[in-house]
Image (tube, rainbow, N blue to C red; front, side):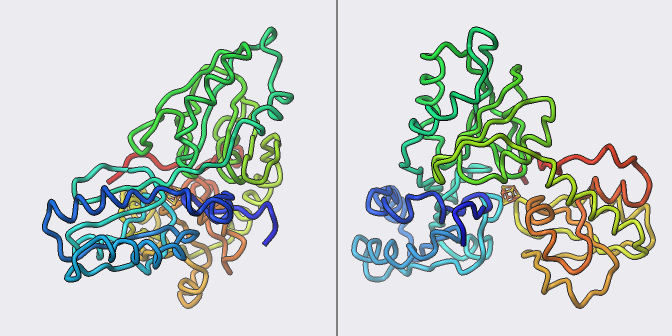
Length: 349
Ligand code: SF4
């Protein structure tokens, strides 16, 4: 696994904190204990994203010490990559359900979200990123975005830029996002601001690539405090890969249209629209979308209406072309190739 290995939302393996700062994480055990006592709970469910699952047993141990012996603690073994991906089976069967590592996509009394903010210092990498920003005398406008893991430092980041003469533009994109300035791997609406340059502070390249595709008119500067690098988002290689996939799918006669059953990933209207217009399209329902699970179907191509990152980031691993809904429209000739854009996801459930 190299330094640049990228992960989906909430996978904190590469944030640095999983290696160096474990003891400083705040699992908010007091809040969990309080909820258990308030609800007189006998079953507590804990869900961690993939990169934090190994922390589960320790957190369960700590809770066992704090709670009565008759309280059962369960760890979710379901894969989890975002707040869109709650273990609903566990949620229904526990009195207190705790989701770690993500900010809420939708608030609910039933769920305790423990965000686990990164404590990596973002200021050194912002200092480096300044060289890529326009001089504030020439262009003071900067859009600022980050991921949920660094949201606790967002105010500091904005102050830092303002102290150096920039005018910082921020917004809360839409209801899928909890915070002002927050982006998800499937939603960059927070970057719809009046600035030609966007500073993205966060780990990996996946978020800013989608951001740059969604806003081709903006210069997207990536300040990655995890891998300690500053880069400019370049979509060319990524676009080539998508064009190649669409070209392959142009010969397809049959399509498997995937409806994802994860709570925050369902887009049935989009799937139905495709099915209504194509007799050779078939609806497949599934939670985890993996190459192995699709291999036996034998369709010529697939359209994924679930998490867009599965299509774009894992696309090459599928044995047949895996398209976003927009790419499908291009492959069947309903739209021109130059309308290829990033698949974004809005709303909750
Ligand atoms: S659907 Fe969006 S929030 Fe959920 S895992 Fe995919 S990119 Fe992340």
